[in-house]
Image 1: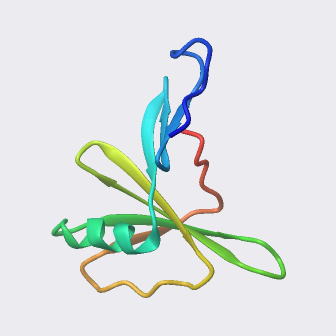
Image 2: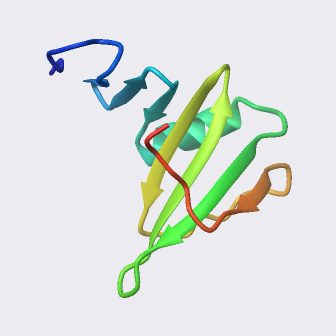
Length: 95
């Protein structure tokens, strides 16, 4: 694990893929973990965006139990009809 030195309130601390900031809490997870989180909600909401010209990178965000979870994929995911999708122009992952 790596901890950032300095003022804890002003600088983020990155711990095992998690992002903590003074403005909010977001967690970057692997794709499989993201899908597992979605399966725990009855009616999840996912925000989707894509970036890149030659190689598209799809970014996905959802909220669960007060945390915001992020993941990225080179493949566009297909979701079931029980998942509400919002397509965004961009997603800022620096909460």
